[in-house]
Amino acid sequence: MTSPDLDLASTDPFDVAREAAAYLADATGVPRHDIALVLGSGWGGAADLLGETVAEVVSSDVPGFAAPAVEGHVGTIRSIRIEDHRSGEVTHALVLGSRTHLYEGKGVRRVVHGVRTAAAAGARAVVLTNGCGGLNPAWGPGTPVLISDHLNLTATSPLEGATFVDLTDLYATRLRAIAREVDPGLAEGVYVQFRGPHYETPAEVRMAGVLGGDLVGMSTTLEAIAARHAGLEVLGISLVTNLAAGISATPLSHAEVIEAGAAAGPRISALLADIVRRI
Image (cartoon, rainbow, N blue to C red):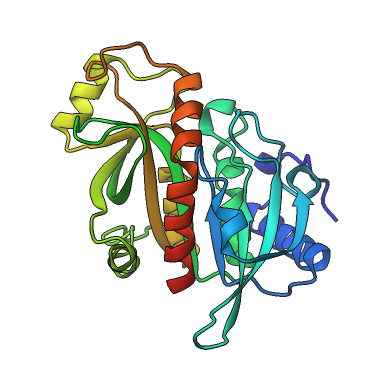
């Protein structure tokens, strides 16, 4: 078994994902997980509403995973049993509470290891969530927004070599339609990922808007690309935790992000749980 704190740069990342999936199957007693969720800032409460937690594993015990480095993220991976009371069908969700960000300096392979593990565990779809800054003044803190597309401004990719993947419908139209069945009022927007960890300057926010962006943050796009490469359907949902720099009249802070996520938590968690049950 590979050490949990292995150097992913020197090991085949797909081999490590398969080892992580095997570890999770053994630790949870669930041989296959049907859907995966990556819970960003503000979204953690959704796990409690999905169904019965079958098992909870410390992330850093799983090959290739590290403990979370950001306040607001949970250092565990949960296996949750979801029962459709109408059909009696049972599915299992793999909830990844620990996300690695590019700005942590651990490499792109580590950033996308969670979604690759989900694919190796049998998942057919992944839900990627985040907390972000909004460019639309009508989207106040606490507004959930479906991601319709993205701009990857990290200057990197999780794909290596001559690996060509079509991203035309990266954030699946089918899954966004399901989300709007749950809440027809959900807004949609283009998510722009910067490297971080510093917040964007007002000029960078203006640039993002000129390029077609509606949301700015420091996660999600690399995971989405890796998920599509692995054959997963992707649903992305952002929580606007603050207006972006230059739009907000006040300085940005991580405390503001945490506060907005906590305030919106019960409402957005219920929304996400309802969506996941239909996927």
